[in-house]
Image (cartoon, rainbow over all chains, first blue to last red; front, side, top):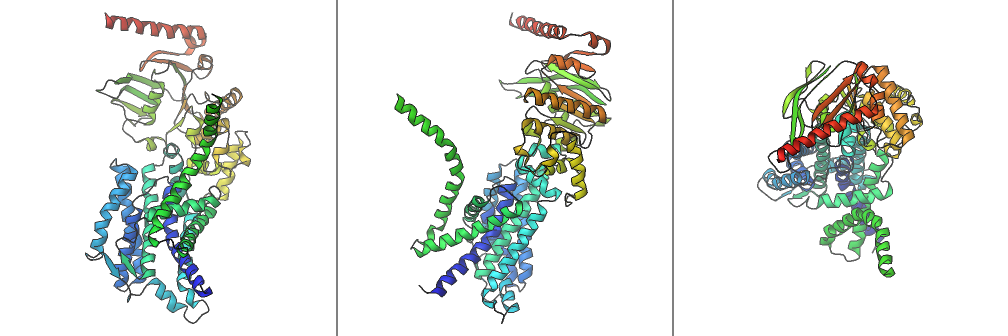
Amino acid sequence: MSASSIFNLIQTALELGLISSITVLALFLSYSMLNVCDLSTDGCFTLGAAVGAVVALSGHPYLAIIAAMLAGILSGLITSFLQTKMGINSLLSGIIVNTALYSVNIAIMGNSSQLNLNKAETVFTKMKDFIAGTALAEQYKLITLIIVVAIVIVFLVIFLKTRLGLAIRATGDNPDMVKSSSINPVFTTIIGLCIASAFTALSGCLLAQSQKAVNIDIGSGMVTIALASLLIGNVFSSKGKIGIRAVCAVVGSVIFRLVYTVALRFNMPAFMLKFVSAVIVVIAISAPYIKSQIPMIKRKLLHRKGE
Amino acid sequence: MLKINNISKTFNPHTVNEHLALDKLSLDVKDGDFITIIGANGAGKSTLFNAISGSFFTDEGTILLDGIDITLMSEHKRAKMIGRLFQDPMRGSAPNMSVEENLALASGKGGWLSRISNSDRNILKDKIALLDMGLENRLNQPVGLLSGGQRQALTLMMATINPPKLLLLDEHTAALDPSAAEKVLAITKSIVEEKRITCLMITHNMQSALELGNRTIMMNRGKIIYDVEGEERKRLTVRDLLEKFHEAAGKELDNDRMLLS
């Protein structure tokens, strides 16, 4: 295998890692901060891709990003409305919205399950034109993505230190305390989920524009992949400053893609991606629990021997 | 100040577990009162606090605070006027957020998008220094690292940083070790006196029920069965209180017997 093809593989892994890292940052907000597992993530990711693709096809690649994020906010609004105002369990409301979005997404793509963006201008082709002729011209996708991810991280770091951001973090930490600070936890949950969904949709929009195609399955399994990435990132910094934790979430996402790329090189079939992400999530979430049980298991074994 | 009029609350209505937790209870609290509340487990003391602070809505009756009808006001809106501390020191603060962030949220200063400024930080630092627990040097540490006593003192500071009209203390020192309990109680007294906050305090300690405050009420089966203040209260001993307690319990037994016969 030549050096350039290895380089290409790494580059693609970095790009995909950065694109999904925005979904990871969305989960960082909803799962780590707000303590809500938002299962509408898959559908919302596809929603962003579909809306972004349709708007990009009409010749507005930048507007596509804004439109995708607005669609994400709307989706987040519905999910949070169901769980805070309609008495539907938070996991269930995510699943319900996810299911409904399947139909919505096909409708958005004009009754089709896929769209081709080959001829459309995207934010990436804009960047390509912008830096054409410079030394970095080949890395136009990476540069675009690094800029977007940096903006998202900076936004999160600033936002989570504002009063609203603090209230959102407190809602996940101790809702009683939020209420006694005269803040309505319903309000903070809605805002948090809307922002998270906007990021998820942005992530989907970028993937569609990057691979110049959307299909209805583009987001399937995204929530597990993103969760796996988030938990890999947590290994480096589960506590500590918000900014560091956000950067670690992105690093986790990139590592996940790199490991996946390596696994593919060792002839792991591509369809195993989702299985691997599921295993990672199981290990990462259950490990602390199992670790805490080990002393008890040891004691039980000794107890049995003693008999 | 606080006017509670004939409030009732039944839990699990129309089931075998139906339980009348508050039974047409009325209470009139005067401005500046410090009332201690005693009663056996299940007498309805905490339920009364839940009703006042809005954890649930009462089935009937009205609650007025300072002339405002709060009967159907949501919990977080009432929290502007009512501060509350629980027995569990973990309940009042967010463990993964820093001391400073907890205080800043409770202080409620600034708009949604405002950040903690340096001047805010200095004000918070001066306030927390008043607790004399060394918390002013731990502003950036997560609250989860503090001891129970420190956390309860912090919660007290958070609840009174904007002096509420009414402070509800639900055995807030019962889960602390004796020296921490004493300290938190001393801080409570000084804050309540200094800011002239009207206060209701549930306690299991009969001695402090009589020593603290200016009025004592005893609850049983969702009702106030004894209400004492002024000269009569000054002459009261713990033994007297216990007698009242048994008197009430005895009557209850008689009632039960009547029901059975």
